[in-house]
Length: 92
Image (cartoon, rainbow, N blue to C red; front, side):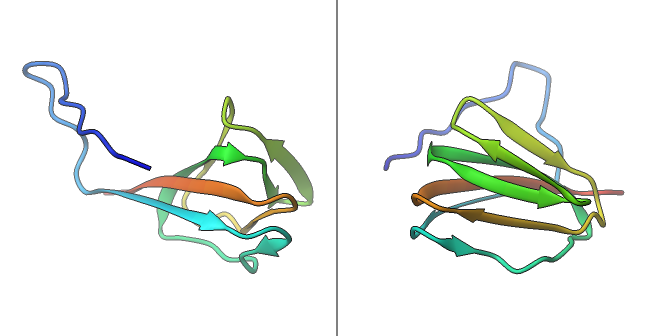
């Protein structure tokens, strides 16, 4: 997998701080339920992710994403395996 830097439009800076994390998740793996002190967008680069939040479960493919507000309990996992990515921004 290669990453390419994309510049913001002239005169517009991206929000700071922002964090991006990408990793492979093996089949039948999940992260235990947890919450963050920041907003988070979760999506699959490839494969399929399951995001469980507030008693609901969302199955997302690379064409979809889930927005997780600050402090919300959630669990992310996959049955078939996936390339996972999240972008986070700490609230002011």
